[in-house]
Length: 176
Image (cartoon, rainbow, N blue to C red; front, side, top):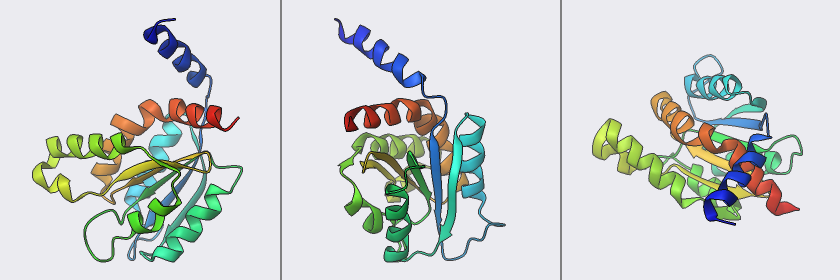
C-alpha cells in the first residue's frame, strides 16, 4: 500500500467524525463574557464548522487556576478537544505555557511553528513573541492560542479547523 493510499484511507476515517466536542477557555485578568471577543469568535467558528462547544469558561492569568480547569476538562468524558485563548505572550502575567505544557503527553511542535510563520506574514517580526502551542494530553487535543481575535481566526481557519477531525481521530485511534 502506497503512503498516499494509506493517507487517503486515514483521512476517510477521520472525516467520519462529524462533530468534535470542544471546550473553550479564555485566560485573562480583564475579559468578561461580554468583552471576550476571542472566546466568542472561537466558539462561533467551531460551531459553524459543525463542532459543538460543550464547555466554556474565563479564568484569570493564574497558573493554578488555569491548570485546574484544564485538568478538569482533560478528565471530562464529554470533551474531545480544548482550545485556550490568551496568556501566550512574553509578559510576566502570560502563564498558559507554564500552566498547560506540563500536562501534555506529546507536543505538536508543527502547530506553533506554522502558526508563527503564518502570523509573520500578517504582523511581521512581532510574531516571534507568541508562545502559541498545541499538544495531546489524556487522549485529547489541546491548542493554546493568543488572545487577539485576529490570531484566533488565523489559527482556527488555517490550522485547527482543517485538521481537527483528523487529529481527534488519530488521538482516539491511538487510545484503543
